[in-house]
Structures are given as structure tokens and as C-alpha cells.
Length: 405
Image 1 (tube, one colour):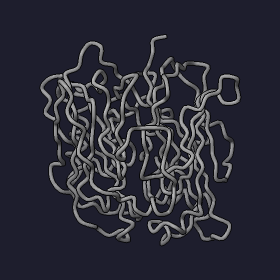
Image 2 (cartoon, one colour):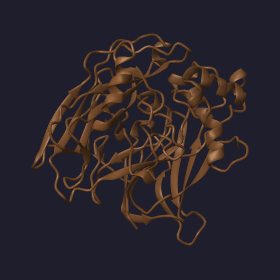
Image 3 (tube, rainbow, N blue to C red):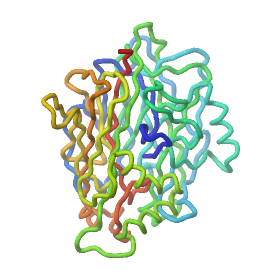
Image 4 (tube, helix red, strand yellow):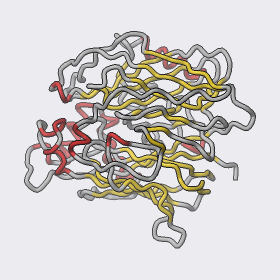
């Protein structure tokens, strides 16, 4: 996943429509509060299989199948590494307003597709996206920070941004399905940007064939009662030292950050220290577990969430007002599995607002590095926030609905 420009929207602002009661179909089952154990075996198989068939259409719905304009052969960035993030713009050809009630990413080359994010760009941002595409040689453009288009992210209290985070695909995921009385609003002239993270670790950073992935949109015309929601990503720092039996140049924090900067640029490389400041920490606290408190900036209703880390992730939790009589755990994934990053619906919506705090806590395990084929051939490192498969993240991505009061 990616680092945005805005401190509040660490993974990019997203305007998403959901209803109070919704279903998410992922990994062949309904969303719930469980997750498969995080084991070396599950991570090793993270390429997964092709997407399963979508659920049947409901009354008033239609499918719109979109595909990359042509096949793309990923290659590692010039600065080194084995990861490429590539954004492709796809025009859904909308002539009237529609609401998105379901999405499904269908990667063609699952051997190298690490994960994907679907962004919806409103008509006002279409020109900037097309300009970005036109000025970049080849198909699409590299996009390590959101869509890679300037001004795409704004803060949650502004009610959404130019580019909206619509869906996330990880290996094994099937269609993300919402109820019919909820949807993401797409105006005529809107564009879809498909960001795919291609992981070339299995081929030692060499090209591994082409990919022409597709996205299936489930659309409806909507009603005046259709509700629109946003997603709020909450992150914490990652400061995971090398294991006790590991050593090497990259086991030094500053050297590791310099390596991230070389691979992804100063914006991503500066994230590790920026997060410390945003989380009120004067210095890094090396260890397996990290936390960060986020003040709720405006009235909103919390509906669901899911946790995102990379291959060294063990557990992630989001708590509301920890340490108080009204404390509540709103997201708990005690055994994180990269292959099974599922949206978890709260038992009932939770009203939150200014004065409330959401704390995200992540636990990583450097010992997994030796057990995973994707990482075992790489030198040990002090792991900080970064876009690569050998780097890490810690984010609780929460689904909320803004309220006026």
C-alpha cells in the first residue's frame, strides 16, 4: 500500500458508500471477526489464485467490466528493489450518475500481483490524471504515493478528496459487495485508476511476463436514501529491529531509511520520522509492537474496518478511548494473515466525535523473515515504513460516515 501526502490520510483519502448493514464477500466467506493464522505457509502462497465468480446481480444493478487498455510488463525501479507500483487509468464511460455497490479486481498474472487498489476520480480530477498518464512513457505511470497525482488526498473533515479509495484487492479476495441502499457516487466523466503492486521477488527482480488485469464494477442508479461513506486509515510507526541472530549494514535504522529513500524517493523515505512526530513520539522505540493515538477530528459513525501490514505482520488492533471506562475494541485481528485481509463489520455502528481517540496497535515478527521465500534471500534489515514487500506498514483502515453533529 501507499503513503499519502496528508498526515491524517496516511494511505490516501477515500470516499466510499456503505450502509449500516452490509455484506463483504472475501476469501469465500462473509466478513467476520476471525482471521486465518499468520504462518510462513500462508505468506509463501500469497500469489493466490484467480478471483471467484461474483455474486448474482440484484434488482436494478448491472455489471461494467473494465480492463487495462493493453498488457503491461512490470520491471523493478531503477534505484533497485523488486517492487513496482503501477497506476493505469481506465474510463468507465459513464453518461449518467451511478452508485458503486460492489467491486472485484481480477488480476491476470497472479504470480506477480502483490495487491491492488481501485481509485475513483471525479470529473474535476480527470484532466490531471490524463495529463499524468500522457507525460509518462509507456502504459500508465509509477505511483508510490496514492495515485501519484498531485492534490489527490485531503483530510477526512473535508469530506473526501479528488481521488477516492474504492476497493483493495489482496490475493484470495473475491467481490467486495455492499447492500443495495449504499454506493459510491460516480458522476459522468469519472475515471477509474487501478494501482497494482507487482512483486518480482520470486524472479530476483527480473521481468516476469505481462499483466492485463481487469476490474468489474457493480453499479446501480441509486435513490435519495443511498448513503455515502468514507474510509479513514489510521497508522502507527514501524520500528522493527533485526532479530538477535541477524546482522548487516541494513540493521542500522538510518541506513535502512536511506535504502527506502533510494528505492521509493524522499516522500516515502521520510515517513518513518514523520510518523514519530505525528504520534507524539520524540524518538523511535525499537520493538515488535508499536502504537499511535489518533484524535477524532469531527463527528462520524464507525461501521467497519480491516488491518493492513506486510509479510512480517502478526497482529493488529484498533481501540476506541483506551484506558477509559468507555474503552471499546473496534478492530481485532490477533493472527494477521496477509492473504486474508478482510473487512470486519462492527456488531453495531459506533458514534464517535471530537474528544474521542482511536489507538492502532501492530505487532510484527522479524523471525518470519527466515521462513518466507520472498524474504529469506534478502539481507536482514531494520524494518521501517515502506512500499516494498521487504518493508512494513501498520494501518487500521476504518469505514466511517461523517455526521453534521
